[in-house]
Amino acid sequence: MQKLPPNRIAYITAVTAGVLYGVVCQATLRLEVFHELFAIMSFGFVFVLPVVLGVITLWFATPMQRASWLYRIFAPWSTVSVGLVVLLVVGWEGTICALLGAVVSLPLASLGGVMSGMLLARIRPTELSSSVLVPILLLPIVWAWLESPFPLPQQHGHVATAITIAAPASVVWANIIQVPKITEPLQGVFYRLGFPKPLEATLSHPGLGAVRHASFERGLVFLETIDVWEPEQVLSFAISVAPDSVPTTTLDEHVVVGGRYFDVLRGTYQLEIRSDQQVILHLASTFRVSTRFNFYARPWASFLMRDIQNTILTVLKSRCERQAQGRG
Image (cartoon, helix red, strand yellow):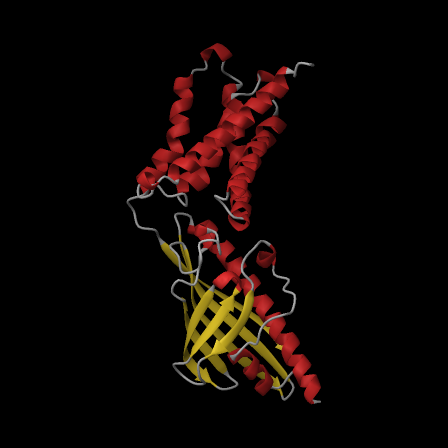
């Protein structure tokens, strides 16, 4: 059997060590005894941990590998990628969270690889000691523990979308107050990643105080209490998640609507009548994000809401225009 070259052995060792470290950290956090002390959605584990994975990757590298800028930048990507695949396979993360995690983890792992590579390239192998590595390995855990006593900061976001519909206002209004079962194919990015697709919306009765039940796949139901009802002009409502309507398998824990980290608060449809046969339909929403890194989470939440709203508007446009043509 042919012996593997030292560089290959070092690479495999580094990736394996990094993945094992990441999995152990994730497993530890999921133990109930540590649930109140640490949070996976902490700055320490989302932003500091990837840097440490980059350090681990370079720690086990050969001197030749440490001197290579390509290795410093891209070798840590293997550690992060394999780790995310493991989390997906064991069911600890869903596709959406893995994707969002990869976007931030890959460059941060490269940062850790570059910094440690530059430092380790100047240190003799005989001077390396595990006593140096241990504090680095503990850094994400200590960081998460230090931030855990503080309440999660909240930020609200607003997303406005619109679409032009060639149909009378009466047709558009009829299609937004109640949405019959959606059978059309939906093209939204997040639906392709596993976010539940909308199914239908029913109305308890016309007028103020009515409750709109918006049903999504896998048992997700929103209760939309109408507080603005101006026929053929404005429909606005407060949004809450129906009690016990969100099974644990419906969404990633970190993007559960109405959960600790994310919620949708309000929705508003507004009809801008341009002519007897043309309406600009506006759909706006207000949401909340509550994380240690709202600067990162809020843009993604806006992207998610815009994707969902544009998909809904596209379905409404198709239906309204088809009905308007049928009238003609």
